[in-house]
Length: 206
Image 1 (cartoon, rainbow, N blue to C red):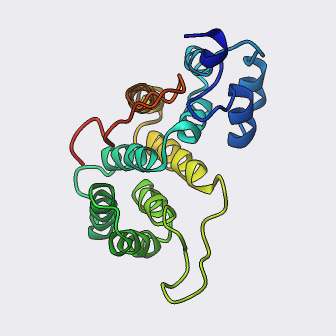
Image 2: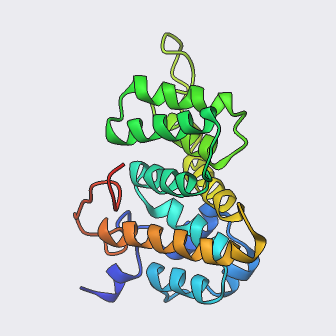
């Protein structure tokens, strides 16, 4: 494996290109060097406790369905012991789309997100599933896909919101767990090394 391959992602993007697309913080940018491999850059973000930047980076390198699974799993963990019925529906419709990504399931997830006014991790997870289709408009209207880059940004927003739920003193620990989960998916999906490996979404059953 050459150094050139290690410095790019499976998509051919460099860490600098992903940073620009993800809109990472100035602190994250200061850690970036021209010769740095993308995975090493993420490890640096984690070591410096720049967890939101790590989430944003990983969200932009995962395949869409993998990133929706990541958002869903983190949102599910943040629902609490007695979630409202609308929250349960958002989690379940997202799960159904991950397992079977049909247009019907996608639109059900979108409706569940709208019912929650897009204001919770569960709602944002469902919204990410909805945005993965060919159009965000009615089925009989001209295609209106989600703008480029919106899905990974929404995934990142979902996960950061999920990490902020609960006690403030536990935020860093929740971020660490969520980031580790995303890194596991990225490693299994071989996004770092530009090969043809594939992975089934989810480190557990959806």
